[in-house]
Length: 242
Ligand SMILES: [Zn+2]
Image (cartoon, rainbow, N blue to C red; front, side):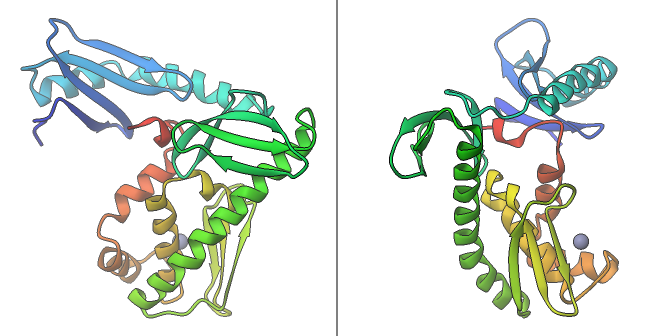
């Protein structure tokens, strides 16, 4: 595959790398905080092979760097402080705290996630308010999207729920046709949410991830592999990719 744009993405050994072609003489490699975004700047006429070789030869270093950021972000708990980063539908917002008699969240499309709370120092209250927002918004999205995919795939979900799940984005019981979605999906792009919906709905036809499951996934969401990779990329935060 040739890179013919000024900016492109490559996957090298499972690591997503943003490649920028610039009017420069040397290669530059950066692993950026907070999530370990890998960025390579190269001269305009650099071949795809040369870029690949450059990245591949520095993989150990890159992985070490990414691990540092990964461990750091795992440890850093949300404190709900002013200007803290929070994600909603794949975009990063800065937290703004506002005093209000009512607890709610407002998204300023450009930059801010405004958290209106009775007490701006109450971490539990702030967390609860934001989680309620995530739950309501995810429900709104699922209520709209699930019927569309039910029709496309020809299945019917008996009931769905939104849960806090540690290891899965979704789960389903194909016998009673109940589906669960991870509350944290509200932080992910719509495309990722749709991928999880299709995945779980296809499970209503096919329980395992066998040949027929893959066939059905290809049929109903041709680019599902891309979405899966994006969603499961715990190291590099998709949200920081424009
Ligand atoms: Zn599955």
